[in-house]
Length: 149
Image (cartoon, rainbow, N blue to C red; front, side):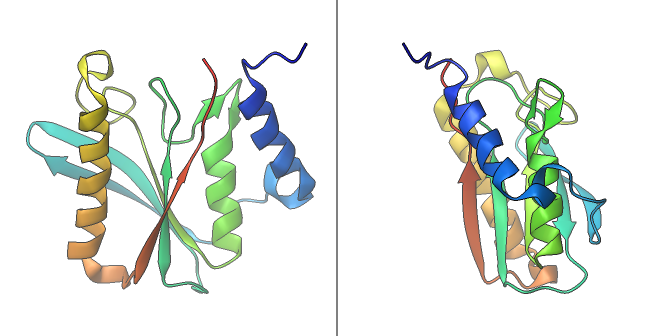
């Protein structure tokens, strides 16, 4: 019988291992910029990873799965989003990953937040990058991880 718990995590890690450079990528050739995006009483803190040479006008925004997660989506010591951001940067694609409410540098209380609060956090992030067009992003890609509890 297949256990559903952890299956999605196994699947994601398996997909990363199909490309050997993704799981064991060299340090990113791009630049990391720490950002704090404030809205109301909540501050969302994350890392914008910019490639040296941009191949895409889109920004990939990484969304964590259920439960409080840090910006790197650390699972059993493996920093999924960090490795993914490095790989995307090597391919000329910018990305943004962030700490959930109440985790790492982000303020708020994850346990008292609702799904609508998390959706509003993503909307604020999208608005931030749309309004602060210093990097000229022409579109956004939302990338999420689904895990069974």
